[in-house]
Image (cartoon, rainbow, N blue to C red; front, side, top):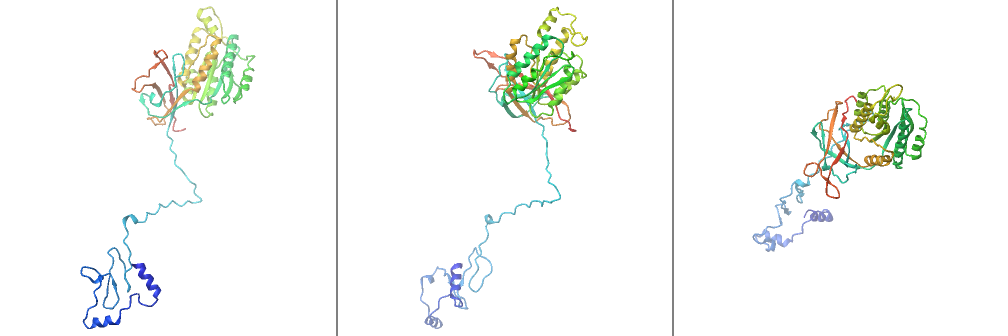
Length: 413
């Protein structure tokens, strides 16, 4: 109604927008007569317009309208509904000042990564395990596994070889083992080669060139000192690997005998505990000499300058290598014959390239630098130990290899 009346008023200019009432009708009204009754004037009908005393029609105010009126009619302003309310203004961002740099708050949540190797007693990798098959305990407290993955990535490893002027058999078997490991390398692997006698010597830094690895091993022809400082060489290797990102491995080819290291067993053990993302795979050499001592045929033999070595020394060295491997999640190997080396290093390669990697946020979030003991269990859907059967349907025992623990970060780090 509002728009239509408004248009007619604008078109007529100063003229009134109502129709002109005939004079005869006005006269009849003055004489007391009645106007003809139209359909709009029937009883019960509400006329659209009513004529006030000033002779101008009056329009009823709509119930939903409001606001001021004029001589023509009301300005119909509908009431606002709740859903039509304007949205609230967006929050004002703080004004950036040119002289004040932006700062962000960073919270470090500790995350522990554990590589787990699951094999049969024969060393065969067991594939197809899921996240629910792993249960991890830290200091006896169950932990919630947050990430799970099967790693088959290129490896980053250091081949650390004992090469000293001790025994011809040791040197030959050490080279044979080193060449066997080099044959298992792939084009994307990163390998560094080092040897030790009285001190460690780097032959080639990390490279993906397989020929460079063989060229470095070819330099091991004439030994130098007779001392075999295993602890010093291993400490130096782990110290250098601290600056290398990602997962690393140390392939340690050694007799296990330490003759003249400045470091003690306690210090190298603490260094291994404090080193993260490093797995040690010791490979023993010199079985013929060991067998000679076991049978009692070898007497008066010295390893180094005037240092006698007996059967107990080799047993102690074997125990130390097993300890280093267990602390880092690796395995120690003690081959008896040269023909075992290709299969042995093939197993090491499979162990490195086929591992289950699990991560968790420890419930003990204190950064106190303490050593936390870890235990990884492989369970079935019912929570009982996982049972694996061979092709004949017989139960097969499994080995779960993971690091024994880790050292938490300290607040001063």
